[in-house]
Image (cartoon, rainbow, N blue to C red; front, side, top):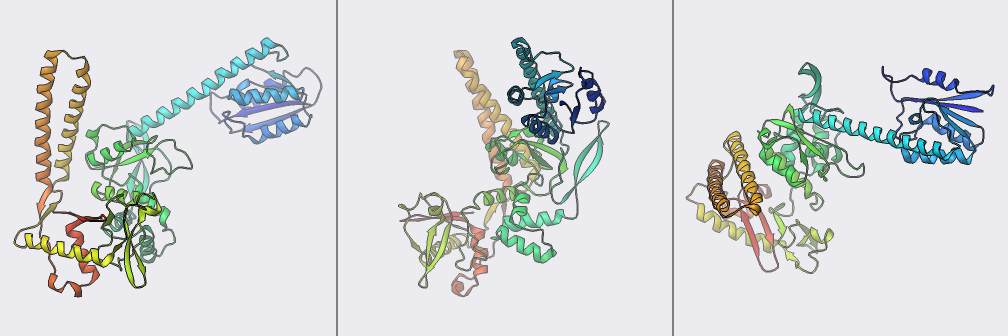
Length: 491
């Protein structure tokens, strides 16, 4: 029996139809032998995962086919490796091969050689088309439009016109308020992903909330108001950023896209990903978003401590040797601190000794009393951004200065003495300007604030929540070493 195989990826004007392919293949039949048609419509030639093609191969292996006719070589495959394997199967089963478009006699060495040369160019064409499509995809991403797929939770896709073309952008829905609530809970409380899921399940009476969905929302840069801090974050992660830093003005959200390993976490490996500033407005300030990223990165080491029932120092206690969180363990009515890093890196097994929780609490309380006494008659101040836009503009200017300094330094290797002199003067000038901008940023970030100090004489009778609330306002973290404790104050 003669087999006619036809394939068409999609219906389009410049693509030859299945029906036309069949007619052209029939003209190559020179006998009255019966023929069978195998059609694969809507399948690419980049691989051989096609139902009718598989059926054809099975029939060939069962010695039911004597001759195979196709309209053109690339109807079988655009992969030179796949095509080579297919030709081996045809040869093994004594099946002759005819292409209606390219006239080759596969029984001769020259014919075979020409056949493989054509397949090499067919594969090159496929790879060129794929590269062109990928480049066009990334170019469209640079314009800030939504590239496809479902909208992130809290947004909907809206069609609009840009440069006389219909494009998609994101528009917030009522659910965006839930997104803001999620970020606020995760960034500013001790709530874990599981804890937040329980809150949302109860509050919104829905079964859609779980750790995975919350993690995706919290990782997604679509929500953040992208400023220079976001630019620096993704730059440090080796992410490919399509926009200049001057586009990160703290208003628009971002789009993260690109090819990735299916088995890897999209939000843990940014190296081969691409980030673009989008046209839609962000809803989460950069400080809150980055605070969530830090908490998510450390999620593997932080156990769910609930409301911190063991100590008012919950969330502040860190191992001084590895930086991992300290966990409260109870044994025979006594509470100890263990480094969670022991279970992850084994780094602290031979370094950090066991500490009694109450001894740590007593020491910290005494240090807190000294700290409060020194500020009793003073107004405490902490770093708080007064004007996000103004500071972001200064950071952009700072980035330009640092880039200019780097460019000058890179050119110094080929400079003579005269150029070195002027380069040195220019670098000093730029460095002084850099220091001036840094000082201005620090001045604008500092805003005086009053902190209510509880009655420390009645400390033992205060609730854990009151203690925690006060301690968290004045302490960033507490580093535990074997022979010392270091407190990182916020003021």
